[in-house]
Structures are given as C-alpha cells and as structure tokens.
Amino acid sequence: MSVQPALEWQSAQVIGIKVETSRTKSLTLALPKWMPHRPGQHYDVRLTAPDGYRAERSYSAASEPERIGELELTVERIDDGEVSPYLDDVVVPGDRLEVRGPIGGYFVWDVSLGGPLLLVCGGSGVVPLMAMLRHRAAQHAPIPARLLYSCRSEDEVIYRTELDRLIESDGLLEVVLTFTRVAPPGWTGYRRRIDQAMLDEVAGPLGNDVRSYVCGPTLLVEAVSDALVGMGLPPERIRTERFGPTGS
Ligand SMILES: Cc1cc2nc3c(=O)[nH]c(=O)nc-3n(C[C@H](O)[C@H](O)[C@H](O)COP(=O)(O)OP(=O)(O)OC[C@H]3O[C@@H](n4cnc5c(N)ncnc54)[C@H](O)[C@@H]3O)c2cc1C
Image (tube, rainbow, N blue to C red):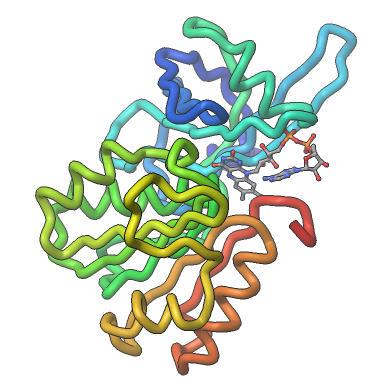
C-alpha cells in the first residue's frame, strides 16, 4: 500500500534561522519532497534521541505556498518543553529534521475562498495566520483583512517588521495589537485581553459575511469564538485552532 506523500516522513535540511523575538525563532527548511500547502495547515516534526526515544509535535506552516521548495516554521520556546527548546536553542543551519505534511483540511484559507477575512490570535497563534497574510500578499488579492493580535508585551510580537511593511503597502489590511501585560510607552491602543467590546470594534466593520480564523491558547480561542457567535456571525465561517494545553 502506498503512503500519501503528506503522511510520509522526509528529511528536511535547515537552511536558515531567524530570531523573531527572545522566545521565538523561524526555521527555514528545504524539503526534498516539497508540495504546496494550504495556508493554515501544519507539519509534524519528529525528533529521535540516540537511545531511540521519539517526540513528535505539530508546527504550522508560516510560509506561503508560493515559496516553492521551502517551508518556514516559527517555534515559540516553552521553557520546560521537550521539543520547542531543542528547535529554538540547539538546531543550527545544516542540521536535518524529520517532518511530514502538510496536514489539516479545516483550519485553512486561500484566496479562492474570498473574504472579508478576520484573523484573531494570541502568542504563537499568529503563525498560521501569517501564512494566510503572506499568501494573500503574494496573490495581490484585494480582500479586506484584519488581524487582531494579543501579546503580553511589545517584545513578544512576532513578525512585527513584516506586518508593518505589509500594512504600508496594503490599504485593505489592518493590524490591531493588544498588550495584556506591558504596553510600550505612549501606547494608545488596546491594553487588555480580547473581549466582546474589542471584537465589536475590530470585526464589526467587516460585516456578517466575514470568514474568521482564531488561533492560540485554548482559553483565548474559546472566548473569541463564543463572542463571534454571539455577534451573530455564522458558526460555519468561524474556524479555530488550539495550540496550548487544555485550560491554558
Ligand atoms: C495544529 C498545531 C499547530 C501548532 N503550531 C505551532 C506553531 O506554529 N508554533 C509553535 O510554537 N507551536 C505550535 N504548536 C504547539 C506545538 O505543537 C507544541 O505543543 C509546543 O511547541 C510545545 O511543545 P514542547 O514539546 O516544547 O512542550 P511539551 O513538552 O509538550 O510541554 C511542556 C509543558 O508546556 C505546556 N505547553 C505545551 N504547549 C504549550 C503552549 N503552546 N503554550 C503554553 N504551554 C504549553 C505543557 O502542558 C507542559 O506543561 C502547534 C500545535 C498544534 C496542535
């Protein structure tokens, strides 16, 4: 029986590492059996210790499918974690990692689905949403989009420079940040967790036909999706992905 290409493990070479924040790095991988993913899909990464012990975790594709042959993963270090500290602190360019993917058919968006697009995230939940924004930009799609991104503090904002650049060149894209612990000096924007009032202000103007993608810690995802349903948005247009452990 032949294995579907996406479910076959392949040995990818790390060809670049970019520091995103003090806790987050992006790894660029060259894949021998690369295939285009749908923005929002993820890959599994498998580490094998010398004694044969294996650990496997999922990481969303951060790159857009237009970037042929390469895959970017962005990994936030969880200090007591098994896999993320290895990917962030030990892996160097030239190393090889076992990966399989792309995986997932529910939390996906591409320009053929249209918009308007509402993207809501906390922490590393921004990663699959960035793949959607990068794809939207690569396709020059005139689809209104808003990203509402919750971070503890300014130094934890992943992709900050690229997001600023995207907004400058794209009148249909808005990025709204909210800081839950420390806001930068002079900050006049939101400084609290995402709540109903914030969603009314950010999502309301996009109308009821909006396609929503919500990603991050479980509590954020549940609170946001409940609020969006409460606003009257059709549940089948609200897609969610939970990254952290249940209850976080
Ligand atoms: C579909 C999917 C896509 C994902 N994409 C990404 C991605 O693009 N980037 C990314 O950084 N992560 C992503 N994750 C999370 C990732 O798979 C791992 O769970 C994460 O890297 C922690 O793994 P670990 O081995 O370091 O920690 P573990 O050894 O699994 O856990 C160590 C401790 O940290 C807690 N913990 C685990 N995960 C989190 C978390 N996310 N936040 C807070 N505490 C946690 C655990 O409960 C445990 O107490 C994704 C998860 C899923 C399900």
